Length: 285
Ligand code: NAP
Image (cartoon, rainbow, N blue to C red; front, side, top):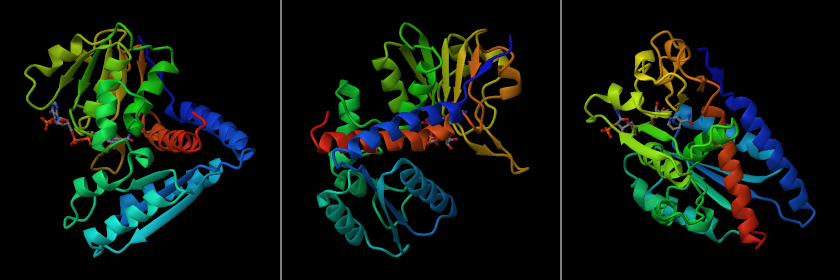
């Protein structure tokens, strides 16, 4: 079997088109979605992410503010900025770029973001709503995974999904979303015995591990759908996922490449969350 490629770039483009059209119709009602991105310190990767988020806002006709704070910024100063953004009517979404410098408690910062503006979906109330099944702003990478599945006709309902990884950012929320979509979900982690045997039982495999090419062809049931969230840099500088793409694509029915699979969905889902938050703030949904 030669797997069909789940083209994250194309699907992200499709969703961006939908967002753009909605933003244009909101403009007629004088509503403009607004996103504030806060970066503390000078982590090079974070700087790229923040630039890309601001660029996406510009392309989609959103209002955006980028707050670049010095690495020495105190927690109180950061919390004061968040309080100000919480009260700002032109800001519908607040994203604090992680990781933060060590002297700032990430939890205190996440907890301080208004739930209505929690476009990262990391606030404990958003997480609770996700678990209960309420209409929360959902974390971006996990909701991107669900879109990739649905938009390629791979409905999770009734399928056995095996998620490798249990982080708060990817593994746990993607598992909850798959459950919401009526999949039977198994969550694996570093202490799961015979991981290969568990993965072999999956109709849908989601790998969010951070170990290059961990998932091998003989771990995958023929015809399974494989979503690779991992982004790993190899010694030669090339990017690769958590799945051995060459081998697994001979066995799977659908597979995401790295790069070009899950990656392009994350910022797009952030934009979708900001649009949703803006609509809610104006009583449109
Ligand atoms: P993380 O917080 O390090 O979590 C990794 C998870 O994998 C943990 O639950 C860990 O288990 C498990 N694990 C580690 N080694 C394992 C092994 N050998 N067998 C089975 N499970 C193992 O990472 P993360 O933040 O979830 O990110 C995962 C990957 O996704 C990374 O490569 C990251 O770069 C990528 N990522 C991509 C995007 C995107 O937009 N494309 C977004 C976020 C993350 P324990 O809990 O037992 O330690």
